[in-house]
Image (cartoon, rainbow, N blue to C red; front, top):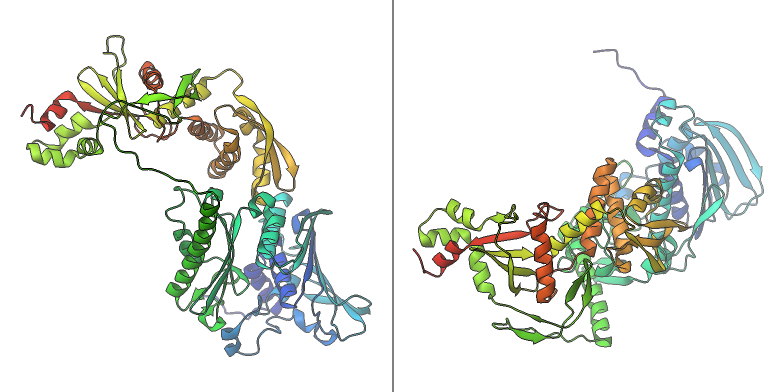
Length: 603
């Protein structure tokens, strides 16, 4: 073991800075939180070169007293607490006294500040944590912090920083969180000389959301305001139809502090459990207010994670708050435009009904009136699926039943194969087909999805359509560069997308296989694919999956006899059409012998 050394204060501060100052966004977070704690109602954030060369935070808060300016940059100096007991009664953003000392140790810092009781302000300059100059100046009440040349004296840390645009995106994300969590504060965000964010500070979370995500998303939000056993939950949430592909638009705050909380996240999403498709996540901006003694905020170096003394109570409060908001909003909409639905009985014979089925025409669909046939009840179909139970009843092996009733992944499609005859449709989803001594069930959506995929993959013709009205949408700041860098992928798929403002894009063309209203959702799905893989061919292939799925006939859609026959003929005409693009089987086959055993015609 080597000799034990006592580190000098400069080294200690640089090591501490590694926990607090990870990148320029960390500096912005700490300084903006200080401005909030100072009681500011107007804060301006300005950066250049992704915050690496220049960050300026200006507020109109209480300022720093002239006698305390130098002390503020000493390690573990803070105005938030005096003793350990104060940690259990915290309502401020900061409290450790690490931020200013850590930032000053790895950058060049200028501070201009004036408290409301003073006639003149103070200017203090530091480099590497050392005071270079101090003087008096005239300035308004509040504080301006200027941080220049971050990590200039720690080149190894500088090497870990990303491109300017990436670092700026992280800062934008921090600013957005601050705007959403503090709707009573007016924020201005200037990136490279251009104002990219402005919030009015009106106090409305929807107004704050509009400045971050745009009016389209803001108008889809509903208010949350609920109290349960001393826990106050308020904010805004998205209706189920506005759910996204990831959790990027979920923000949680506890006593004003942005946090990561599995408890809050799970409870909120659980409230949507019967309303969202798998893989969809709701938009959430939730604030949880409770007695500070019931929460420990001192469990993470950057104060991003917390602990509750009663996780169950917090979860219950959040879940009930979200459910109550959704129920209230849904109930009001139903009263305004009630929709009466009737449960239709299973048809045992041919019956003419008016619905919205599809007619095949050049592999597209048109609505028309048709006859539908429901020959089999649900009980019979369930019996076909219950192979294990059947094996026991007939005293034959489970493997034999599997051989008779397993999904058919390679149907006979040679010229000598018996013609596939359509018998009807069950549950408006599965086409019943007879082929020789087999009865087949074909999943209409999976089948048409695969057909559309093969057409897209092999097409040499124009596959896009001009949209009557451009579809505009807003993406997360971190996704802007991702979209622009991969614009060729979207063009190959039939999209024409161009910038339409800050974090906003307009799609003027879209693949002909999808409906115009599905353009935005499809773009978001492709962006998620781009995040998960760097293989261009894999991304392109999976993107075609998404486009094909959107353009395919859906389940629970009645088809005419001609439509079903055309779909079945196409399935049996191509060897590739055995599974859908996602790998699910298209055809399930039941042997005649198996059916006759079920009806006790043979033993």
